[in-house]
Image 1 (cartoon, one colour):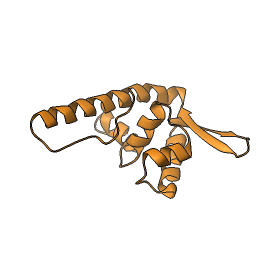
Image 2: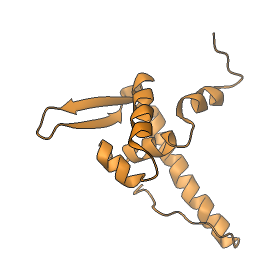
Image 3: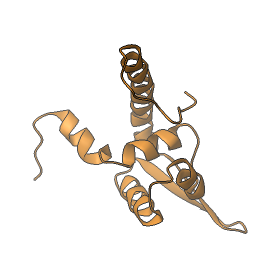
Image 4: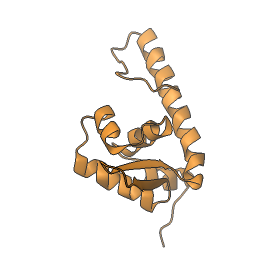
Length: 118
């Protein structure tokens, strides 16, 4: 049995890491195809993106829908369970943008390359 001290540990165990928060935030604003995610997160490899998406689907955060079109395409979306997380993540994205602005006002050399359309 896995034990956590407090709930945030369980949250971070599921969504933390270098790529999952970015993937989830982009999916939260409608970037839901593999190729689109690769364009928005060019530093991630296809292999890592696929692994991260598989984990999020296995954790019931995202759904994976395959469309039998030519060419075939796959879309990801939040599950009903994952929807509750979507709002929290988008709020964290907005807070991060405010935080960067706060740091800039204090003279820090920091910027956000691409803001999300929140």
